[in-house]
Image 1 (tube, rainbow, N blue to C red):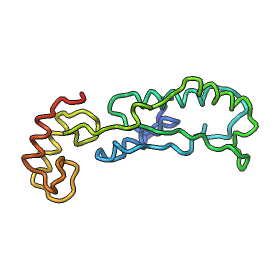
Image 2 (image 1 turned 180 degrees about the vertical axis):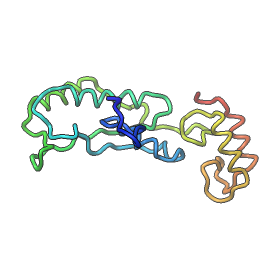
Image 3 (image 1 turned 135 degrees about the vertical axis):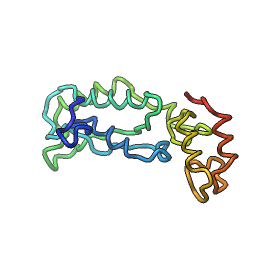
Image 4 (image 1 turned 180 degrees about the horizontal axis):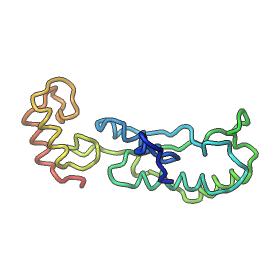
Length: 172
């Protein structure tokens, strides 16, 4: 669902897609790191029905992973198997069938697993563009560890600017 919360949180998704709000908070220089969604449910105990929620959740993550510039989600784990609380799946054959049907799609990020950084891509969106150029320009003269220090010599200088300029348009 694209439903959002009410004011003053109208920018926050209300249902499953709230993961997008969380991912948007990750700093750009960390967006090449993997994401693991370790607990996911319908915000209620799993009913023993095959309502397509699980299929839709896995399809959503698959589509997200194949959207250029998206940080890759390596797993979506359903909460939880053993009957320790109302959110358990064990023995709920219709819910398990929903999961089985989702697995028939063979969703993978296989070729996306080993993501090589794009030279000159400061913000991690896999496209060297104006935003990368601006990040280098705004950080120009900085010393120490900085995402705009593309050659990792502990300063943002002409050589970092040249990397962005020579790679401009790469990955876009």
